[in-house]
Image (cartoon, rainbow, N blue to C red):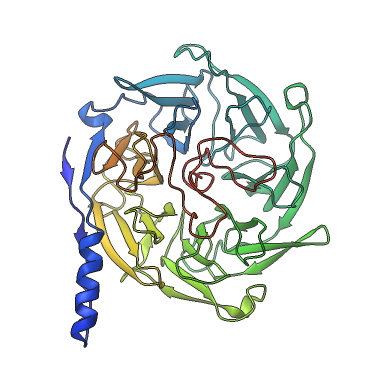
Length: 458
């Protein structure tokens, strides 16, 4: 179990001694020792799926107080594998035993209202079906798959990214998903009896370009998040390079940046309006931090600055949360080492994972967690139930099948004093999210149980 201490990037000289003292204190406070576990070294079970690991979902599927890990595949069966933490370590369960060509993404929500989290994944460019799987809790068997249901089985192919949130302010969450070959975002209310329908009511929320096919961006739109961007107390949708207002029954896109991809919002500094971070996803481009200077519902108000001294290469990992427990929001971003489907060597041997520690005023201290590893949909989540945030990663094709964890100061008592059944989430700073141990609550627009946005966890 290797111990990793991130390297701090060099900073420009500061002119004031007082500023040097403050920065030095900030850097010392953020120091974390990361304990690396990997299926390659048999610290974790081999996911034993195919060599194309498409989706990664972290959610408390067993109501055990820690994030479980689900990986999707698309070359051969099984299509979905669950890595579950137990008292003795981690065990492998099969959720979907059949061969289905599943795409990147995945979302979790208590779809059938029975007190546990169900999961959603969709087919890739070869298929037009979006599915949900019924959580059998508490009757888990490693060799008994979950019951699969259909959300959509018509229209265009490819479903890269899904998310749940109460975007319409009804008091009940909706499902939003990208349908790439339709060049559209869809929204669907959860049916009253979801187990006994084979089609959910779908509406086109948005159709058109969302930051793809410009400069070195990805070929198709991707990326979803849910956050109260404008501070009005309602959860907003973010997708591609937009955030969306919802007024009088209609969604209106507000363009934030030029290039879309992975997108996250949070309050990195005091104020009513959130800031937005965009990474290039399945393309290359800057990791960029956007702030609204004026009315956040006007595209002209949003201005960005680059957070790294180079572009990200296939920056398909982006998450935000308070990693070091200092009360300020941090950014985690990483690159793919391999995106082609052929065997080694890597397409990008210098792939890097960064943690940018925030100071609460919109400034960041950039550290390097590791280089030379392949990252795809990496996430922040409390996988060991000790109340702090760990790092979860599975590559796409690099050394696949493979799973890696970086445990925050190993496994132990939370430094923030959070109970082991609680999970520190991205936005306890603004009241939208907090320490929570239950799935979605009716009157609150929070999906606490998916550990990194709702996943915050989500």
